[in-house]
Amino acid sequence: MHHYVRAKQPNSEMCLVCGIENSFGFGASFYELDNDELLGIFHPVKEHQGYPGRLHGGLAAAILDETIGRAISIAHDGNIWGVSVELTTRFRKPIPLDEKIRAVGRITKDSKRFFEGTGEIILSDGSIAVEGHGRYLKSSLDKILNFDVDLHWKVFSAEDDPLEVEI
Image 1 (spheres, rainbow, N blue to C red):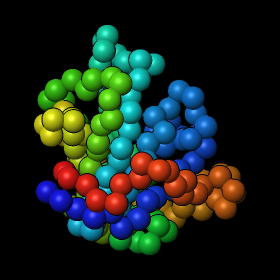
Image 2: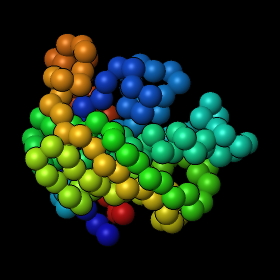
Image 3: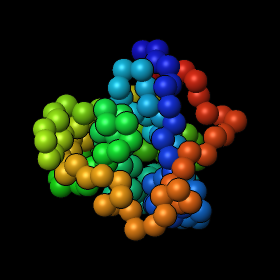
Image 4: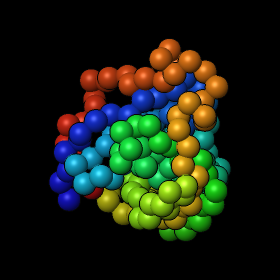
């Protein structure tokens, strides 16, 4: 399905999933789509492996958790983020290393204090590798982060940022 990218979300410096300065991390980029889903793009490398040539399952869960947990910010102008309460994953296929992988997350239930969401990690051939369902506590960004948001939490534009995607 064809979608337009409405906005790119910020990255931090040292987050395992989105940190741009974390040499062990994924450096994932997250994009808000026109259907209110969140797209994450990441590139696992050999340091992320579990079994040879495959992404470690716990790291796959971390990516899915971050993608679903960030999706709430779309509906709240970036002011509300998710703190993980529960995550259930179903692993369908191994995730290969050394190729770009996509994760998609969406909100399925939104109440005053909590929200729920689902997501998938999608391989380059379009098949689903991991499915997940999570429950999260809503929190404002200033309560989660213990650093200067203006200095250490920002959008970094890149030449390969997509304007439209096929999911």
